[in-house]
Image (cartoon, rainbow, N blue to C red):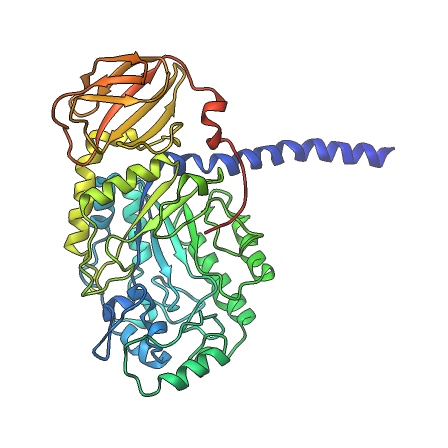
Length: 474
C-alpha cells in the first residue's frame, strides 16, 4: 500500500511537468507561425568555384553540389577550401538587409554536404577557423549581429552527407553530363560500387563512426556555443537509420525550444514542419501540418557566377503572398560570394519586398490559411481576433470595371485599402461581397484590401487549419 501511495505521489509531481513540456513544444511554434518570412543563406568553399571547375560550367544542381557533380577529389577540394578568406563579410549588414525586407529569421549553412564547417569545431579540422587564413568563426559573428537586431537564428546542418569527413554518406550522382572527362566511366562505376563515393579518402571509417565522432559532436557545438538557437534545418538523410537519428533526437530533447524540419529521417522523425523545396504546394497537397517552402532567387542555392536567371520582384512578392495564403512560411535564399558579398540582384529583390511589406506586412505576419482557397484575381490570408475574422485580399489582377467580387456571404463591417488606408464601399449582392475600387491599382504587383468581418468564422469554415496529419510527402 505504501509503495502504491509513493508511486501516486511521484505521478502527481511528474504530471504538471509533462503537461508544461507539451505546452512548451506547442508554444515554440508561435513565433515561427507569426514570422511567415525568413532568409536562407548557402555559403561555403563551393562559393569560390562559383559553379566552374576546370573550365566546365556545372550544368545541373546548385553550385554547392559541384564537388559531387564533378567528382572533385577530396585533397583537391580541400586545396580550394584552405584559401577561403571572406574579408568582405559584414554580418550586421546581412542581418539588417533581412530585417528591412521583413524577414524574421535567418537559417545559414553551418555545414553543407561538402563537410566544411563554417564555425570553429573540435570534431573536425575542416572548418573555417582552423583550415583557412580567415581564422574567424563566421557563425559567432552572425549570432552576435542577430542578437543585436532581434533576429532569430537557425543552422542548416548536413547530418548524413559529408564528402570530406570520412564515413559521411554521399548521394549516388553520376559524373556531370557534358564534361569531357576521359575518366568519367571509371569514376561512375566506382561511385555505383561504393555507395556514392568517388574517392577512397571518403571511406576510411564507417558511417557510424562519422555520426558519433563528427556529426553528433558538431550538432552539440552548434546548440551550445551560439546562444539560443531557433531552428536546426536537416537535409538529405542519405543512408540514415532510425538508430542514427535517435542520437540526434536525444540532443534535441535537451533544447525544447529548437524547431526542426522533417528531414532528419523519414518517416519516424517527422520534426515540427514539412519543408518542400523550390515548390509551392497546391491546396490539395496540404495536410494541416506546419510547412515552409525554401526557394532560390535564381537557379542555384550557392553562388554561381554565370546564373543570371533572377526572379523579378513580382514573382518574389506574389510567391510570399501565395505561401502565406496557404498557411506556410517562405524561406528565401541568398548565395554570397566567397569574399562575403551578397549579389546585387539579391539585394535589389529584397529591397523590392521591403517596399511592399512596409505597406502590406499585416497581410502576411501572423496570418492563417485562407478559408476561400485560391482566387482568380489574387490570394487571401486570414487573422482571427476577439472581435471577429479579418480577411486580407491581395489583388493581383485589378478589375477594369472597378468591382471586385468575393463569392461568399460573410458579414462585412468594414473594407479598407491598406495603401493609403482608404475606406472602400461594399455591399452584399447576389454574386457575393461586392467591393467598389479606385480606377487604378495602388500597387501593380499586389494591392491589399482589408475586410473586417463582424463575426469570427466557425471551425467548419476554417477546418484546413485544424486538421492534423503526419504524412511526409516532400
